[in-house]
Length: 306
Image 1 (spheres, rainbow, N blue to C red):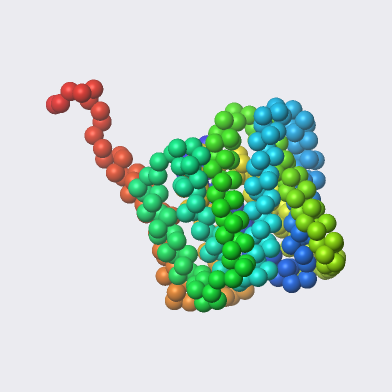
Image 2: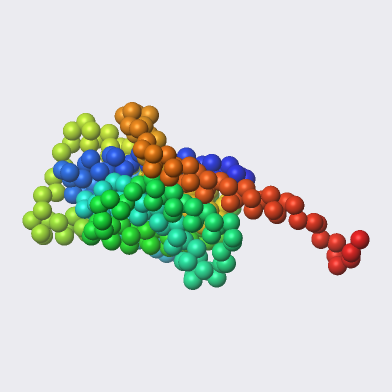
């Protein structure tokens, strides 16, 4: 697997995730976040166990421990993002989630001592600027939903850093990588069920309305945006740099808007158009310039000058 192909796969799952914003925002009107997340990842867990239950049984204790850690980060991030979306707009949620790209290099530096590259810094600045223009989060101010979503962004950054390092060590063990996917789902379900219990204790209604729209949203989020997307992320993210992966994932709101444009005939505003251009530029241009600069460097001559 080449870096280029791996990054194209990450772009694909970013598009999958982008489609979930409208689904989740609509369903949170009648459904508690804890219930939706529990059902979503319950379905994903059942499918994952059906496919890879033997792989799960063969995991080493160390890999199993890492899978639980990944699951806690993964599940907490999803739950907080979903809860936060109840109190903020979809555009603000998308922007704050995309701000994860800022935290990835910081976490990478703190946990693994990895230095930031100049092209990564340029990408982060451009992506944040593009996200700001595209989502216009300043229009509604800052509220508790934004703060909750920001915490989820930090957790996602820690998750991206860990999954890069740990899956890189397992790249020759595809069965272990498959098992990690299932473990993340199972831990997420457990966390969601704990919150369901809290909601019941508070007297909150936890009964979802199983109409056709809810079922379609649930199946899409469980199968496409969870099972398939997490499989691809776990298997192939380590072929690129975690900061680069974070930059790609920051395209999620652009993917969400593009899907709405195609399906719902929604139009981009002038600000969104500018933001989309800057976002795409931040994803592509700094990396291309870095590769061109690297390829133009003279080959080493073992200390001799010709």
